[in-house]
Each structure stands twice: as structure tokens, then as C-alpha cells.
Length: 287
Image (cartoon, rainbow, N blue to C red; front, side, top):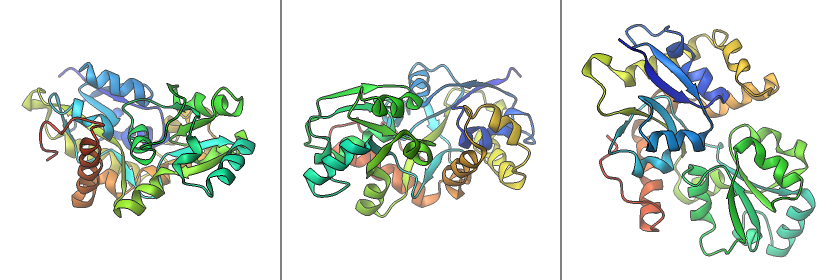
């Protein structure tokens, strides 16, 4: 059997979770070849049907479920792991003072905002949170370029994901809103960030892909040292302690299985977004 194409991000949560599958260490799993790309590129690849297994934003599902099915394992969903809205320290302090406190979307009125992609979960949450607030502009940047752009004054604010939660103070930035805290306070549910999809037209001979992915995540938890070199090789020069914090935050029980609570979180996010006409209704059930 020719290897399946697996497309994931180079971020530590993905390389940690998929190390065993990528290296043929999951019994009974099909062989895979790995393509790395940032989340905005992965969403586009999935829209073009380029990959057999692909990591995408949950926000992109309404455009993808006609061709792909959601796997119950391997994704990123949890608590305390939401996107942040960042500003330079002086500007952020000034805007918070004007609006009466952090977390108020009015802090972005008239702001130039950099985001990691228009079909990312981060941006969907941003649109739900900031409904009715007129920003000056929205531009897409690779996620690793957002904080330098805000620090250097090219943008007033940046919407950040991944390890930026741990590193933004070193850029002289402050968080003016934690969209994960906002979501959890509004719904009581965990925040759905990244999903793993499999093509619907794969031959039956590939076996249980959900089980294969679950086996890879389980292997990562069973021996954290096995993936360490591969994770660090793709971690874009992150400090080892940041890599560990990233994995601890984004790879958890929901990565083994979404379960009823995980599915409920995804359905709530996409249901709210569809009601607000931000995404189309889901074309097929999630499970």
C-alpha cells in the first residue's frame, strides 16, 4: 500500500501526537508520509482535497465535511488554551484604560489587526467576541510573524495561537483578551481548536484510522522521550521548557477521544457561528 499523506503543523502538539504514526510505530496502522505546514495552509490544502489525513481548524469544518470525516482522536481541544488578543504594552494599557478593563472588544475599535487565517478557530472566536466592533483592517500573517509585527507597530493588535501564549511578554506585548476564557465563561465548554480529518473516499483496506491516530497519541503519552528529538527538530527553535508547556496544554484526554463533551463543544461553536451567518450549516453530522 502506498503511504497515506498526513498533513500536520510543525508545532510540538502535532509532532508529539503523531510521532508514532509517522514512524510506523502503531501496530496495524497504514504507512504515512508527512507534510508540514502552518494552520492557514493546512485549511487551504484540505479545501483543495490534497491530503488523506489532515489537521485543520474546527472553524473550517463546514466547508470540508463533504469530502472529509472528523476523526475522534488527534485534535486539539481543551480548557485554558484559547487564542489571545495582544497589543503593544503601552498601547494596550492605554486602550484598556479607555474601555474600562481587559476583555472588552471595544479595545479594538479602529485597530489594525493581524490574524493567523480567515478560517481558523481563533478568527471565528474573534468574530463572535468582537461582533459589532468596527476595526480598521484585518490582515492574515503566518502565526509566527504576528507578534513581531505588533511589536514593531505595523499592527495595533494581533490574534495569536500556539506557543505565543507563553512567549508574548518577551515581545513587549500584553494580552487584552483571552478568547478561551471568554468562550468557557459563555458556554461552560472546552474550546475546540484543531481537528483531524480523513478523506471519505479512502479504500477500506486502510483500516481504522481513528484507532491508528488514537494509538499514536497513546504511544506519545506512554513514552514522552520517544518523540523528543523529532519534536525539537520541528519546533522552530523554541526553548525546551516552552515545548513541554505547549504539549502539556494542547495534548490531553480530548486528543485521545473527543467524547460527548468534545463533540458538544464543536457543535456549540459551529452552531453559534452558523446562527450568526459566519459559517454555513454543517453539511453532514459530526458523528
